[in-house]
Image (tube, rainbow, N blue to C red; front, side):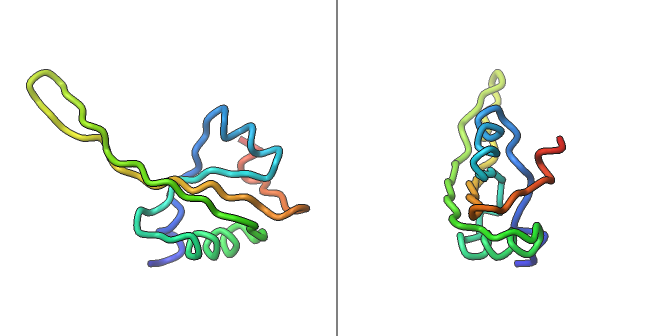
Length: 94
């Protein structure tokens, strides 16, 4: 898997913004990526040191629109904690 395929996009919610003060960032990642791949990719792309990576898998929920039945997309979320003294300025400017 290529580096640009691992991290998809940041999760921008009120709860994720509160974590920025404690060097905690939340991203949607590829479902096949493991913690070591996520850590390595994050360190290479953003040039920071990662302390820990926590991941969560979400399965798609069943949805109905009248008689039509479908599912929402499944996704994987990663919570990335940076080491002390490190800062990611990319998301703070939004």
